[in-house]
Image (cartoon, rainbow, N blue to C red; front, side):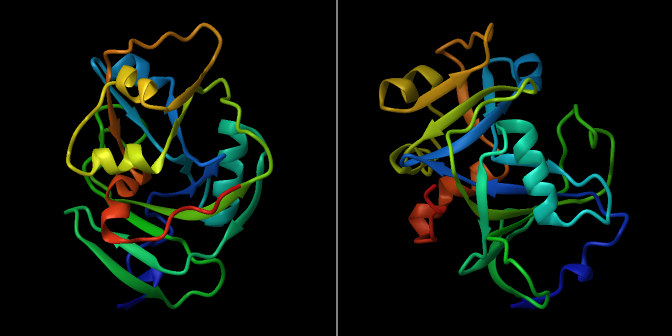
Amino acid sequence: MLISLSDFISRTTPTGAALFLRWEGYHVFSIPRRELTHGGDRLRFFGVGGKRRSPDESWTDCALRESAEEIGAVVSAIHSAEQTYFLSAEGDVITVRLLESGLRPRLILEKRAHSSYGSLASSPQTYYLLAFDASLRAKPQPSSEIAALLYLSDEHLLQMQTGDRPTLGHLLSTGAKIDLQPGIRLSPDVVCVPHGTAAFLTHQGARGWGLAVEG
């Protein structure tokens, strides 16, 4: 399917960018501090990234800025994906070709249902996230806004494809790793729930889609 981003993203459409990252064989995910306040017995984890500051900020510039703010200036390069997927708000995934030139995102994520907190909490607007493959030059470090970085293997993502929601304790006992900010404590009994690009990756292996570039 051939599409143009301008067909559904205008200058007033809320958009953001994220990165698919790997470090030493693990996928890298972030747990923002806000999740510790609102998550209850569920702990959502995300890909690294965030909203564009303005329509004039490119998606790749946004991804680099957000990643530097969240994990330090450790991204060495952003890469064009071999294939771009569109994940609709209804959960349908289709392969697309973009008319725009430049680096190709691996994922265009459409979101209409927003959480009860955050900048889009009361907004009826659809949000679009463009996610790119990237590589790392050094190990990420969680910033002050990030409570922890969670490192999961391909096997952990495969486990979640069936709909299982493992606890943090189970993940860590089966080889996952976590880097916590000083003073942060997480219960091993919280259920880990992939969100955004992390949710996309939990389905990726079963469909034979490519994995992120190793740093």
